[in-house]
Amino acid sequence: MATHQLKTPLSEAQVRKLEANDELYLSGTIVTARDQAHKRALEYAAQGKPLPINLEGLAVYHCGPVVSKKGEKWVTIAAGPTTSTRLEPFEAEFIEKFKVRIIIGKGGMGNRTAEALAKHGAVYCAFTGGAAVLAAKAVTHVNRVEWLDLGVPEALWVFEVAEFGPLLVAIDSHGNNLFKGVTAKAEANKQRIYRKLNL
Image (tube, rainbow, N blue to C red; front, side):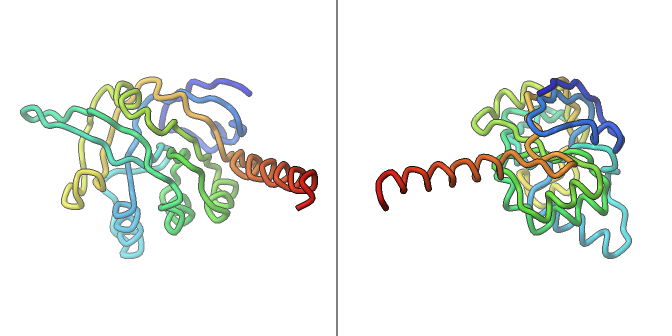
């Protein structure tokens, strides 16, 4: 396990050095995107339309933030992660099309996303659920918001962050997956207990 301090935008080479179980603190630009934003972004790509922000080298955060507008300025109140498996139908193509390097969320993702991470040089990082205020404290500035017509939680929020974390590299670009490891251990323990109980 290693601890990394990184700043976006990131290169594929930088991300390939990260390994499962590494700890990461991220600075620079990150962009929130949930279901509707993923869907619209892929529709744009299919139509040959550019996104309002270039995502290459950035981190995409599965998050519907709680924000408040004070005058012309947006302030982040809470920014906890949403469950990432909701994005599984979109994420592999999203990684391929937009060359994002870090996906942040909670709960892990499926095989298609893991394969895309390995193929294109990206990682999935887990942020602790229930720590939404901690996440918001790392947001130093709301650069802008795009696609607000989708609603506040579903819009693309472009955040500037400083040492956002701790993030745990849960699925790396080499095929290592902490979620699968935990599941395998739990299944092995369950079978061992069943044998002891003669079940």
